[in-house]
Image (cartoon, rainbow, N blue to C red):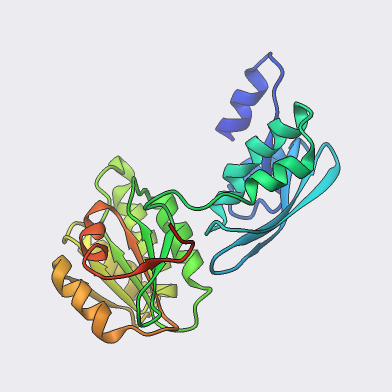
Length: 246
Protein backbone atom coordinates (compact mmCIF):
# COMPACT_ATOMS: atom_id res chain seq x y z
CA UNK A 1 0.00 0.00 0.00
CA UNK A 2 2.86 2.42 0.82
CA UNK A 3 4.52 1.63 -2.52
CA UNK A 4 1.41 2.43 -4.52
CA UNK A 5 0.79 5.57 -2.47
CA UNK A 6 4.25 6.85 -3.42
CA UNK A 7 3.59 5.84 -7.02
CA UNK A 8 0.44 7.98 -7.08
CA UNK A 9 2.38 11.00 -5.77
CA UNK A 10 5.05 10.88 -8.49
CA UNK A 11 4.27 13.22 -11.39
CA UNK A 12 7.03 12.05 -13.75
CA UNK A 13 6.73 9.17 -16.20
CA UNK A 14 6.56 5.98 -14.16
CA UNK A 15 6.10 2.25 -14.55
CA UNK A 16 4.98 -0.66 -12.36
CA UNK A 17 6.38 -4.19 -12.41
CA UNK A 18 5.01 -7.14 -10.46
CA UNK A 19 4.15 -10.82 -10.44
CA UNK A 20 0.84 -11.76 -11.97
CA UNK A 21 0.14 -13.84 -8.85
CA UNK A 22 0.24 -11.37 -5.96
CA UNK A 23 -0.60 -14.00 -3.32
CA UNK A 24 2.75 -13.39 -1.60
CA UNK A 25 2.00 -9.67 -1.30
CA UNK A 26 -0.25 -7.88 1.10
CA UNK A 27 -3.93 -7.73 0.00
CA UNK A 28 -3.69 -3.93 -0.13
CA UNK A 29 -0.73 -4.04 -2.51
CA UNK A 30 -2.36 -6.69 -4.68
CA UNK A 31 -5.55 -4.63 -5.00
CA UNK A 32 -3.69 -1.37 -5.65
CA UNK A 33 -1.36 -2.78 -8.30
CA UNK A 34 -3.90 -4.99 -10.09
CA UNK A 35 -4.20 -3.90 -13.70
CA UNK A 36 -1.50 -1.21 -13.33
CA UNK A 37 1.62 -3.28 -13.97
CA UNK A 38 3.42 -2.39 -17.20
CA UNK A 39 5.41 -5.61 -16.96
CA UNK A 40 4.24 -8.78 -15.19
CA UNK A 41 5.88 -12.14 -14.61
CA UNK A 42 3.62 -15.10 -15.23
CA UNK A 43 3.77 -18.89 -15.52
CA UNK A 44 6.85 -19.04 -13.30
CA UNK A 45 8.37 -22.53 -13.13
CA UNK A 46 11.16 -23.38 -10.70
CA UNK A 47 13.60 -26.26 -10.84
CA UNK A 48 16.62 -27.04 -8.68
CA UNK A 49 19.06 -25.15 -10.88
CA UNK A 50 17.01 -22.94 -13.18
CA UNK A 51 13.94 -20.78 -13.59
CA UNK A 52 11.54 -20.40 -16.52
CA UNK A 53 8.90 -17.71 -16.84
CA UNK A 54 6.95 -15.52 -19.15
CA UNK A 55 6.54 -11.76 -19.09
CA UNK A 56 3.78 -9.52 -20.30
CA UNK A 57 4.93 -6.05 -21.37
CA UNK A 58 2.18 -3.62 -22.37
CA UNK A 59 0.07 -6.69 -23.15
CA UNK A 60 2.65 -8.43 -25.36
CA UNK A 61 4.04 -11.73 -24.07
CA UNK A 62 7.61 -13.08 -24.11
CA UNK A 63 9.15 -16.27 -22.71
CA UNK A 64 12.40 -17.14 -20.92
CA UNK A 65 13.40 -20.77 -20.41
CA UNK A 66 15.93 -22.52 -18.19
CA UNK A 67 17.74 -19.44 -16.87
CA UNK A 68 20.59 -20.62 -14.63
CA UNK A 69 19.46 -18.82 -11.50
CA UNK A 70 18.01 -20.28 -8.31
CA UNK A 71 14.88 -19.04 -6.58
CA UNK A 72 11.75 -17.10 -7.50
CA UNK A 73 13.23 -13.81 -6.25
CA UNK A 74 15.40 -13.69 -9.39
CA UNK A 75 12.31 -13.30 -11.59
CA UNK A 76 11.32 -10.11 -9.80
CA UNK A 77 14.91 -8.86 -9.96
CA UNK A 78 15.02 -9.36 -13.74
CA UNK A 79 11.76 -7.60 -14.55
CA UNK A 80 13.04 -3.98 -14.53
CA UNK A 81 15.98 -4.84 -16.83
CA UNK A 82 13.76 -6.73 -19.26
CA UNK A 83 11.26 -3.88 -19.30
CA UNK A 84 13.87 -1.18 -19.86
CA UNK A 85 15.50 -3.15 -22.66
CA UNK A 86 12.22 -3.57 -24.51
CA UNK A 87 11.13 0.00 -23.77
CA UNK A 88 14.39 1.33 -25.26
CA UNK A 89 13.93 -0.74 -28.39
CA UNK A 90 16.46 -3.54 -27.82
CA UNK A 91 15.49 -6.66 -29.76
CA UNK A 92 14.00 -9.34 -27.53
CA UNK A 93 16.29 -12.04 -28.94
CA UNK A 94 19.31 -10.08 -27.68
CA UNK A 95 17.74 -9.57 -24.23
CA UNK A 96 16.99 -13.30 -23.99
CA UNK A 97 20.52 -14.19 -25.13
CA UNK A 98 22.12 -11.99 -22.46
CA UNK A 99 19.86 -13.24 -19.67
CA UNK A 100 20.70 -16.82 -20.66
CA UNK A 101 24.34 -16.04 -19.77
CA UNK A 102 23.52 -15.12 -16.17
CA UNK A 103 24.60 -17.23 -13.21
CA UNK A 104 24.25 -16.67 -9.44
CA UNK A 105 26.42 -14.07 -7.77
CA UNK A 106 28.97 -15.51 -5.32
CA UNK A 107 27.36 -16.51 -2.00
CA UNK A 108 23.88 -15.60 -3.26
CA UNK A 109 21.81 -18.79 -3.78
CA UNK A 110 25.05 -20.18 -5.19
CA UNK A 111 24.84 -23.97 -5.70
CA UNK A 112 27.65 -26.47 -5.31
CA UNK A 113 27.83 -30.27 -5.08
CA UNK A 114 29.95 -32.49 -2.82
CA UNK A 115 31.65 -35.68 -3.97
CA UNK A 116 28.75 -37.59 -2.37
CA UNK A 117 26.25 -35.62 -4.47
CA UNK A 118 24.91 -33.41 -1.68
CA UNK A 119 23.66 -30.03 -2.92
CA UNK A 120 24.94 -27.09 -0.90
CA UNK A 121 23.31 -23.68 -1.37
CA UNK A 122 25.61 -20.86 -0.26
CA UNK A 123 23.36 -17.88 0.50
CA UNK A 124 25.58 -16.28 3.09
CA UNK A 125 26.19 -12.83 1.62
CA UNK A 126 24.13 -10.01 3.09
CA UNK A 127 21.27 -12.30 4.13
CA UNK A 128 17.95 -10.89 5.33
CA UNK A 129 14.73 -12.53 6.44
CA UNK A 130 12.98 -12.39 3.06
CA UNK A 131 15.85 -14.10 1.28
CA UNK A 132 15.83 -16.79 3.95
CA UNK A 133 12.12 -17.36 3.40
CA UNK A 134 12.78 -17.67 -0.33
CA UNK A 135 15.55 -20.19 0.35
CA UNK A 136 13.23 -22.24 2.56
CA UNK A 137 10.63 -22.26 -0.22
CA UNK A 138 13.32 -23.45 -2.65
CA UNK A 139 14.13 -26.40 -0.38
CA UNK A 140 10.69 -27.87 -1.13
CA UNK A 141 12.07 -29.00 -4.50
CA UNK A 142 14.07 -31.70 -2.71
CA UNK A 143 12.62 -35.02 -1.59
CA UNK A 144 15.41 -36.00 0.81
CA UNK A 145 16.72 -34.33 3.96
CA UNK A 146 16.36 -30.56 4.10
CA UNK A 147 18.92 -28.88 6.32
CA UNK A 148 19.15 -25.17 7.14
CA UNK A 149 22.28 -23.65 8.67
CA UNK A 150 21.20 -20.25 9.94
CA UNK A 151 22.68 -17.20 11.60
CA UNK A 152 19.73 -15.64 13.49
CA UNK A 153 19.01 -12.06 12.48
CA UNK A 154 20.16 -9.12 14.56
CA UNK A 155 18.81 -6.11 12.63
CA UNK A 156 15.04 -6.58 12.66
CA UNK A 157 14.33 -3.97 15.34
CA UNK A 158 10.85 -4.05 16.86
CA UNK A 159 9.82 -6.82 14.44
CA UNK A 160 12.49 -9.26 15.65
CA UNK A 161 10.18 -11.17 18.01
CA UNK A 162 7.37 -11.81 15.56
CA UNK A 163 9.64 -12.32 12.55
CA UNK A 164 11.69 -15.05 14.26
CA UNK A 165 8.52 -16.73 15.51
CA UNK A 166 7.03 -16.75 12.01
CA UNK A 167 10.33 -17.89 10.53
CA UNK A 168 10.33 -20.79 12.98
CA UNK A 169 6.91 -21.82 11.67
CA UNK A 170 8.14 -21.77 8.08
CA UNK A 171 11.23 -23.77 9.00
CA UNK A 172 9.06 -26.28 10.84
CA UNK A 173 6.94 -26.87 7.74
CA UNK A 174 9.92 -27.63 5.50
CA UNK A 175 13.16 -28.51 7.29
CA UNK A 176 14.35 -31.72 8.92
CA UNK A 177 17.29 -30.05 10.66
CA UNK A 178 18.04 -26.50 11.76
CA UNK A 179 21.60 -25.72 12.84
CA UNK A 180 22.03 -22.30 14.44
CA UNK A 181 25.37 -20.49 14.55
CA UNK A 182 24.45 -18.76 17.82
CA UNK A 183 21.62 -18.91 20.36
CA UNK A 184 20.04 -15.54 19.57
CA UNK A 185 16.25 -15.96 19.32
CA UNK A 186 16.66 -19.69 19.91
CA UNK A 187 13.51 -19.94 22.04
CA UNK A 188 11.41 -18.04 19.49
CA UNK A 189 12.54 -20.24 16.62
CA UNK A 190 11.89 -23.35 18.70
CA UNK A 191 8.46 -22.04 19.61
CA UNK A 192 7.56 -21.41 15.98
CA UNK A 193 8.72 -24.88 14.97
CA UNK A 194 6.77 -26.44 17.85
CA UNK A 195 3.57 -24.66 16.78
CA UNK A 196 3.77 -26.59 13.50
CA UNK A 197 4.14 -29.88 15.43
CA UNK A 198 7.32 -30.35 13.42
CA UNK A 199 9.95 -33.04 13.93
CA UNK A 200 12.70 -30.62 12.83
CA UNK A 201 15.77 -31.15 15.01
CA UNK A 202 17.35 -27.90 16.25
CA UNK A 203 20.94 -27.57 17.47
CA UNK A 204 23.28 -24.67 18.23
CA UNK A 205 26.64 -26.01 17.09
CA UNK A 206 30.06 -24.63 16.13
CA UNK A 207 31.05 -24.66 12.44
CA UNK A 208 33.27 -27.76 12.61
CA UNK A 209 30.57 -29.87 14.24
CA UNK A 210 27.95 -28.76 11.69
CA UNK A 211 30.30 -29.53 8.80
CA UNK A 212 31.15 -32.98 10.16
CA UNK A 213 27.46 -33.83 10.61
CA UNK A 214 26.74 -32.86 7.00
CA UNK A 215 29.68 -34.86 5.65
CA UNK A 216 28.66 -38.00 7.58
CA UNK A 217 24.86 -37.91 7.47
CA UNK A 218 23.74 -36.22 4.25
CA UNK A 219 23.30 -37.93 0.86
CA UNK A 220 22.71 -37.33 -2.82
CA UNK A 221 18.98 -36.56 -2.58
CA UNK A 222 19.49 -34.01 0.20
CA UNK A 223 20.00 -30.24 0.29
CA UNK A 224 21.77 -27.96 2.76
CA UNK A 225 21.14 -24.20 2.69
CA UNK A 226 23.55 -21.85 4.46
CA UNK A 227 22.07 -18.49 5.50
CA UNK A 228 24.07 -15.66 7.06
CA UNK A 229 27.75 -14.82 7.24
CA UNK A 230 28.40 -16.99 10.28
CA UNK A 231 26.93 -19.94 8.36
CA UNK A 232 29.69 -19.50 5.77
CA UNK A 233 32.17 -20.78 8.35
CA UNK A 234 30.51 -24.20 8.12
CA UNK A 235 30.11 -24.11 4.35
CA UNK A 236 33.80 -23.33 3.84
CA UNK A 237 34.80 -26.53 5.66
CA UNK A 238 32.94 -28.81 3.24
CA UNK A 239 34.63 -29.70 -0.05
CA UNK A 240 32.34 -29.07 -3.03
CA UNK A 241 32.38 -28.02 -6.68
CA UNK A 242 30.19 -25.30 -8.23
CA UNK A 243 27.14 -26.64 -10.04
CA UNK A 244 27.40 -23.97 -12.74
CA UNK A 245 31.16 -24.20 -13.14
CA UNK A 246 33.80 -21.56 -12.58
